[in-house]
Image (tube, rainbow, N blue to C red; front, side):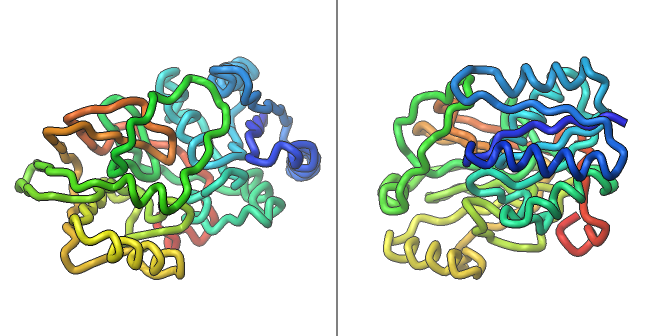
Length: 300
């Protein structure tokens, strides 16, 4: 049995300690292990390591990083037609780690995450398309910044300050269409969720499931900015970010159209460019994710 550890911690100083811990746990459970560390200074490092892993004949991939690292991994596996055959485990080591939060894995407890990665069983998880990009956690749009497209590299991106982010929200006139209806209105944000958490632990609902064949869509209506601030503060205190005026949908596919530019993002990755129309849909492909034994109680 061969296992590959793809290491991309947000704190590079912990790289050696992570590798030592992974080696100890992998050997204890009989894995023939390989390592690859992402070089943030060079483009396409993640994709190169995945191809190396496949050439080495590894059957399980452990991704140590954040949601963005896992996003790149899944899209590359899809391009190589290896999604269905690769077992994927997660060790939280990024900035937000929202998907790891869904699995109840903590960044401060890497040993528990590595133990699960080497011993856990897999379950199929839904994936979804945002136009031509796969995402696994959530996708959407709202900030109206004139952002440059994301580079193909792995360099760290600075997270915008909260007040700057709030100022960037502008009302968007949208038309949303799905198989059972249409809605038109002015909104600050649209979020399409396959898992509950976003932006470091915020959530609209903890009842979102990753294998129900549906996407949970939330349209946050335009409102005074002070109300938006209070909603986000409530979210930071662990309460759901919700309002009675919010539009909530559960769909397999939905399309948004706007007269002005939209700047969509997937799984916390930087925006790749503006669009006027975007389609979100459950993908036919699924990812085989290593999950805790009591996964039924944690959104799987």
